Length: 262
Image 1 (cartoon, rainbow, N blue to C red):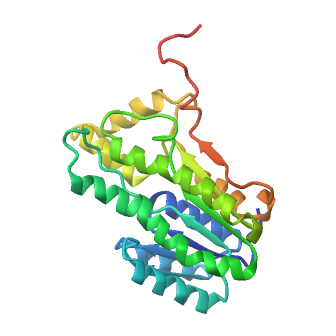
Image 2: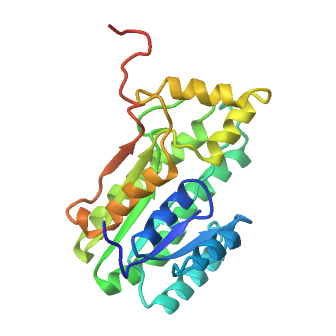
């Protein structure tokens, strides 16, 4: 999974899954540009740059198309090309369908779908110019495969990214641009920790433990395990793979029931 000399754009790369992807990419020789709205962005860039990695970042809301276009153009000017795009930025706000306001609905669609659309549309011309590229969309097992109460807005947007992935894969196959999706199950991220706190303010760790007991591997994945999968899909090692979904969930979507067993 050699990424030496490749230029990668990672959205939401300052924390959570995105940070895991960034860490793995730079460790494998990639030059990385992060698009993120988090206050952590500057700290991440400084930390990785101090270790000798070629990294830059732009604080940008991916819902704002003109600003996204500006950032992508600046990245292309700096590095001369863009080889890899990881559409990782996303949000999840749990609420029952009846209590989901139009604002909550639009918040999910505007970031998870439209934001991903904006960044991809800005990057595609540079990949076409090079006649090569790898786009990796972070979907989820939630939506395409499973769902829980309170996830309607989130699940709908994550399912939409599968159609987005497959359509793009077909549309740009002749440009040698591959498009794949990663479907994480539970990865231990700040988002999961926040969900646990919302579920049980007094004892969020009990929520985490309960989730892990429902996973066949009895643990959550790590951000760097997910990063390794992204690095494989970004590398030439996966050169015959496009339009495909890759599940990384510790087997959590395998059980037919949670009660039967021998």
